[in-house]
Amino acid sequence: MKQYFTLKSFLLVISTLLLLACTGPKVQQYTNERPTLDLSDYFSGTIDAYGIFTDRSGEVKKRFTVLIKADWKIVDGKKVGTLDESFDYSDGTKQKRIWTLIEQSPGKYIGRADDVVGDAQGELAGNALNWTYTLALPVDGTTYHVQFNDWMYLVTSKVMLNKAKMSKFGIELGEVTLSFYKR
Image 1: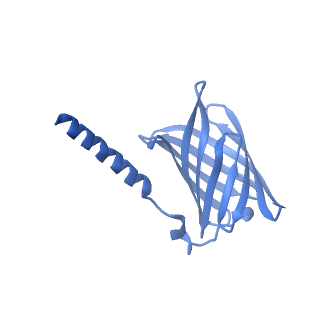
Image 2: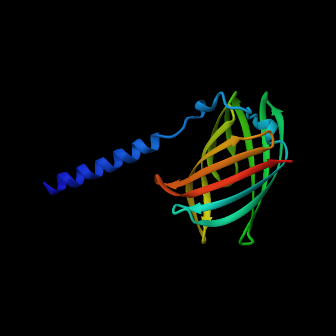
Image 3: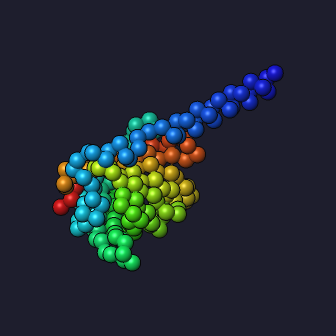
């Protein structure tokens, strides 16, 4: 009888986690929000970003700035963007990430970078962009594959806000919050 309740409790926890994973906003609900985000317009030229990483308790663990140099080209009939990101962290460390963004169809993008596992999937509607991807994150000599659910919202033609939830095995690890400013 005890095994029955243990199995039942386990299945209840798994079902709840799966239901929670399916909840949340859908990018289509932002279709009528303005100003309209055009990735190739916003991410062109120089963009400055300012961010923090908070752990799951809300404590700020790192502060950072990012200088982004971005441009777009047409390759094989598709818009292809390059975002060259230079990170400076509050602890003195530096990091470089170069994204290649490819518009697959209107409002649908894939993204690639050296530390991204597979392709990032992006969907855009109205003023919002939702990116989902797995990042190979080095921590103390070990690399962890961490899932990101990244939401960006265009506030004005020059300002965009970003909130990204980080998780592993469905367990939230923390959040990255960023503000972008287009020069």
